[in-house]
Amino acid sequence: MLFREPTLTELIATYTNLLRNSRLFLKDTHQIEVVFQLTDFANNHKIEVRNGQLKQASQLRIRKGVAAISVTYHGTQLKTYHGFDITDQRFKPKYFVGWVGNQKND
Image (tube, rainbow, N blue to C red; front, side, top):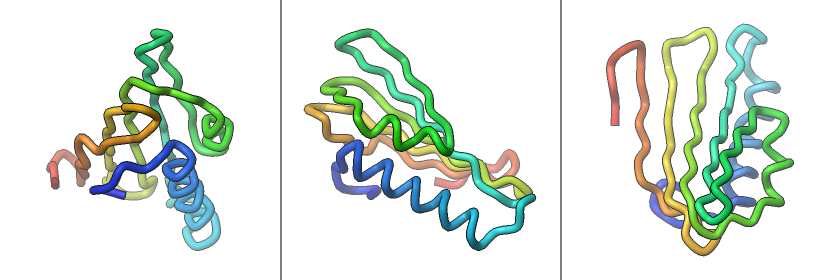
């Protein structure tokens, strides 16, 4: 996922599985929250979906734009960010950064 160019459907499937596993294996106070932000340059639209809304975004057809996914691990100080450039409906990784409190870990 970090080094290949997934499609939107593949990305959403990965993060939907992460959410499902969070619900199955973690305490209610330690659930994750996924925020997926997309910017479509062709139509100048910004879209933001969270958690259960992720599957709705899988129908989008963005040919050129950018995307960012943030995952917050509630009950901890851990937060991650994953950024992509979108070209021809392929998501090219730009960065992956994790934060523990106010300390950056890349």
